Image 1: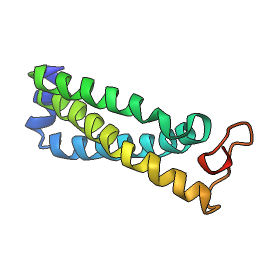
Image 2: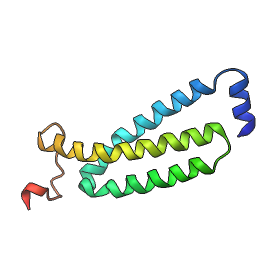
Image 3: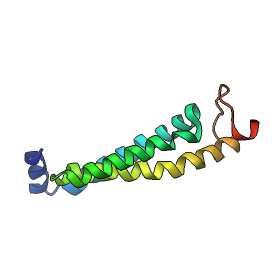
Image 4: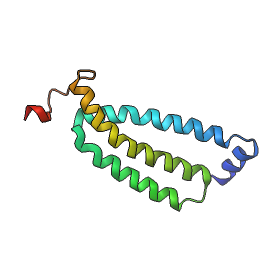
Length: 109
């Protein structure tokens, strides 16, 4: 991986690569939030918290700039997803997204 990072740095592509990967990670977390809220409700926020903590620790442990940065991006995308899970619940209540008919919601209990 260091040779790959050296190659990207040598051709001044490291920042662009990190930007593209960040874009892809954020794009991946958007449907994860939607599907997570649909199937599990807001209680899936724990999974995002655990993933964020693990990726934060991994980011500190890695020496490679690219890998460490991407672990940090995944960590903070996970932390941001916790907020988005609760906002997604509100979007479902407003009718912007479909409700899961097999799951009970807070106002139905």
